Length: 375
Figure 1 (cartoon, rainbow, N blue to C red):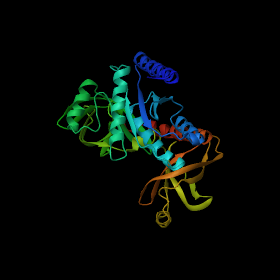
Figure 2 (figure 1 turned 120 degrees about the vertical axis):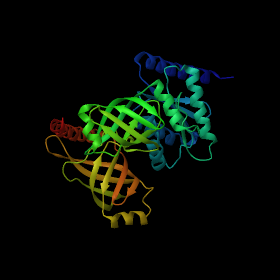
Figure 3 (figure 1 turned 135 degrees about the vertical axis):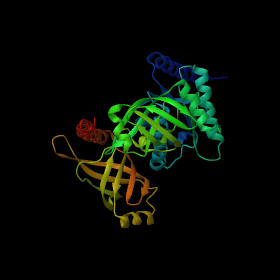
Figure 4 (figure 1 turned 90 degrees about the vertical axis):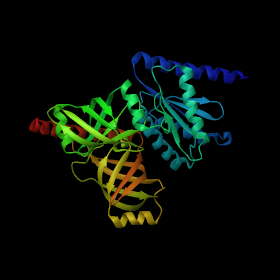
């Protein structure tokens, strides 16, 4: 039987979740629920407070609810499941490096318009229990229509979802700037998709070998090979659809390339590790180009799992320079390219956002000029 505190907390949590359900149905929007386990050590309550503060800040100040047995729920308002999955992976890595702890058990699901409180929480609990019972550390997630860890045929599952909702978003890049287009998947049979696209953008697809598909009911971004482009019918024919664990789409909604060279310095305990040039920038990650000899030194000294500092200067609207300093963790290294996940503070993030908007506006002007030339 629940004690008075537990009964009040249960009613409070249920009221908050039901309010989000009602809002999502009325506003025809979405949200995700995340359940994670963390054994709280009351003798070290300061660390737990700092952990919750960090999660709350990094999840854009969304609500965190306490549940029984050292479990917690995050309500991610206005999140699609692929965005929530990307956020969780980033959070998981950042928590491990910042606090030297692991959030081992994570379950997540997307609210569906047909859900009520019980169906939504039951599905969330199912994924959390799957994560807890798994021998490998995984985030288990899914939707009402899509259980990511089921072994059923992916094409059959995709066809089922598209019959209910054929709306999707196509993602491509223009000089590092994400170009996305809302589309309808007109036909999907035997692994081949036919998509009607905007006539003004048809020329972009003739220069690409593949595109990325994002669907609100599917946890993963889908990479698809462009089989044929029909300029007359403004039709895109895709095959070899592949579900990705990670993609350029999830590395940040807006990623831009510098107009002029931006030098960056990577440091550890205030000691310079290497100098590099920035290849592209987003609010959550930065890719830098470094000398292969410097990269080899990083690998030799085992910096793959260490938190470092990244410093560089970016131009402002009035052509002044603003210094950016942020914590950084290596996400991947490919040849001479290092991709860093970054955790800037609120002030640094606002400066990055301003720079990205500045570059985005410049790229959009170039894009309009390009479209005038091809249409």
